[in-house]
Image (cartoon, rainbow, N blue to C red; front, side):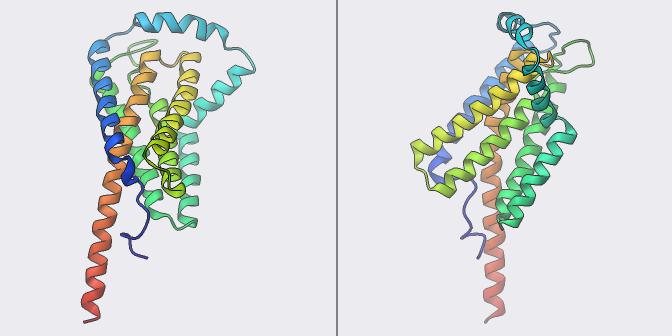
Amino acid sequence: MTGRRAPAVLPPSLRVRLGLIAALAALVVVVLGVLYAGHDKPGRVDRWIIPPTADSVRPPWRHVALALDFLGEPAGSTMLVVAIVTGCLLLRRPRAAALFVAGVAMAVGTATLLKHLVGRTIHGAGNLSYPSGHTAFFTALALIVALLATGRLGLGRTAGTSLVLAAALVAGAAMGWAQVALGAHYPTDVLGGWCTALAVIPATAWLVDRMADQLADRTADAGRREHR
């Protein structure tokens, strides 16, 4: 099977809608970054959300928050990605494996770069907080899984978009709740991390498809020349 015949990781039916959503998400990331650049205190929205959220998280929910937080830490995220990529390779889905690696790297890398550019801090000058890398990571994973499920199930534009957005919302809300509950991030940091994943993953998926198709074309051309 050539790369051209392999299923695209970004379903064609979703490209336009997800492109628009990605552009809007990128705009939100930029606007929030400008608003909170250099800040070291919660904003008005943050102050409205933080007190009741933090005060309400006690065992056993605190244990849930800590478990979610671990999945976004280097050790937890590495184990999770390695397990998923191994599964993709065993199922002979190299594009999916490539997207998981590239997508997670782009989402986390973008969040890390933005942290240094924006310079927002929490609990001291050394704790850069905007956007939340944990939320970007977990949302990115959910987005990729939803994209692959959409292609696998052959969902249409509306159903596919709904699945992708629902997966992103659930994953982002779960990790975002954990980060705010543990006092690691402000709510607006979480929103920035969520939007970072929404902005980065569709573009990364498109690039993976394009590069895989180009490689498949070159391989096919080389094969035809060999048989002449």
